Image (cartoon, rainbow over all chains, first blue to last red; front, side):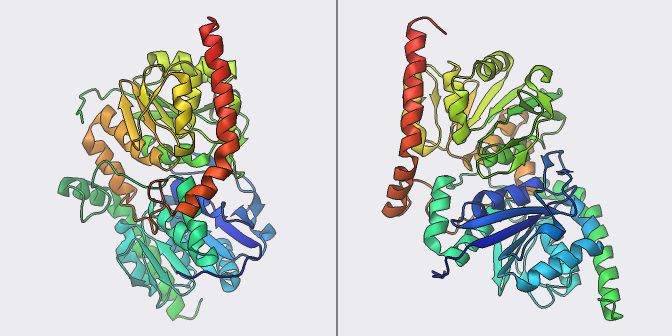
Length: 237
Length: 237
């Protein structure tokens, strides 16, 4: 990893939204908010609080129009992400901030929102395992890794992988030492009590049940992705 | 781990407070809010939002007086925890809910708050590495493990260890399968990009710098712990 000498003030910004998975955001927030000489902007269309999938209330500190140019744009996912893929206000914000950002960092199905903004065509990336096959509908190149870095695009797989992705982002921006300092502060030396974190390692009955539970939503995502891709072919993007 | 047959509705409750570390709470929330047939109560003295160490706004959904009897009481930590150790409103809430809870689950320096409530005397437990030596000032038995289970008391070490602890709690309450389902949902197969998560593995200069940064706060915690213990000896508890 690089050891950049650039120590100017960094602006990090995240989108939050109704029906998000809070952990896609709070994991990376824990890491990125601790980068020295940086500010963190939590943004939504307006400053009204939003509720995550399980009801946790999160409160933006900025409306989209108040967010400055960003060095890092964090895009989390969650079931509510489906509603963002054809939301032009959200997509326009992502395109505008991504254009000048050094890093666009998606976590979980946040990658599908970035994909819907048209930014992942030909880009190597990942997302939550249950939506992995949706990526190619946006012209992206799915890579089955926990964290994928391709140019300015950093993508993390499902939910908790945002922690690993954020430590990579911190290192890319400010060098390994900054990421190591934050990792020790967080005492991030994980010891999962089970080996059930991926479809490859989880017990087959756990995987079967999770696939069944996520299938309908994954199909909705594909339907929307194909509709968006059809509009692109007709020049609507 | 057990496979309890008790599938009645579970009540899980967490304390949030100003100056907390949000991740001590949001990690376990991600896990525990997904236990089937359970409700999650987010509590503080009143329903006013609180800000975590780095400014994230979290909003309680219940005042202490509105919280029902709990099966699980989650007590997170963070620098603001120092102010709770002599806060009788908080300590009385913890004692009352702990008395009837099946599990009292501390994350990070939340253990010191539980200790200040007088509940950890003779109990094997852990906390954030930088406060580990404070535990014995409350009569607790420090155990250098990521998650420690001693009777009804489950303690997790620093910050991110709350995820591992919460998966253990889910398994204790509802069996391994429930925890495995949640782990797969979260895609929790961590791959930290550095080996800097504990003082034993982090580069020496990272440890030295972190110890220097945390020393003053650790000493304040010991001063307060000794004052509390002195009151106990004089029968004030």
